[in-house]
Image 1 (cartoon, rainbow, N blue to C red):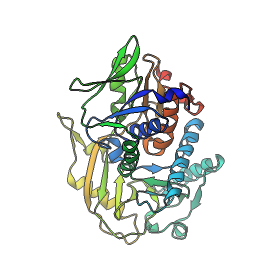
Image 2: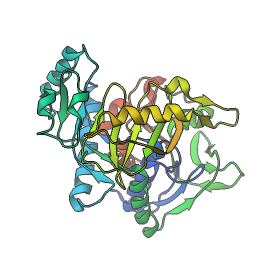
Image 3: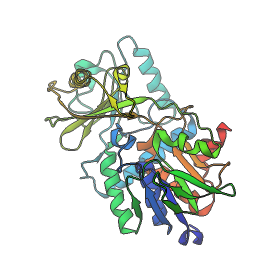
Length: 373
């Protein structure tokens, strides 16, 4: 990276995986970094993400290639210490509802056409490929993607923050809703809800579903398609499941401590948002999701929810990531994507490079915020 990195001061708004990853990469490049969080670290979307590491299904070629690079960075981290309980590669297994056999076959054919490792399985073949699955839950066929994995983002954030502190990063917790300061049309720092200011040469806004609202006062419109979602973590249970499962009634992945992380979307109509910005859902609906997940696991063990978190899942209006510098406010960068887990490490690396050198990375060319202007 260029020598300008040695003196550059960067303020990062957001304590999720995108903000923390970029902050650490900036510190590695020689920058001075202050990281501000509205509440705690990983307290929003990163704390309630299924965190399935993949590029399965059909999407634009640039998005697919970026996701593949994202999975690659996790593989490098995994290879350094495969014993980490919070990062594992056990593959991914998905199936559609009964009567949609042709849909599954078409998805498999597409994945094969782009070189994605994809195996189309009959229910009786599943046990020989991936352990711990109740094949009786599979109505017709399934796709197994051996190269996929999962990460517990709160654990990854803790891991990265150790390096953040070791490299001299400054952390400001519970700063409330921060805003970008602008002078002469250029971003010059960040102001907290309490009025405390932090001058900076560049600012990164990486606060999940709140990102469009933070940059709106700068004259920037980023369509926001973020829905309300929930992540449930179960109580510990003995199991042999290694793969992430995405099925018609439950998405499930292993989680540290012999627990499972669960989500889906069929229950979203049961979530209530309150005037104070909090959310609630009937406990019987949470248990119903756990019951659906139990049907997918060999032996159908009883699953009991230990905790659940509800909030907005960051999704840009057109579904594609939003990465890069704002034309309306030079020096201010954004990171806003549905794929925060898969892209967490690679996005932090590429954005840090752009902030430090001023050189735009070609892999982010189609994801610029200017496409909405």
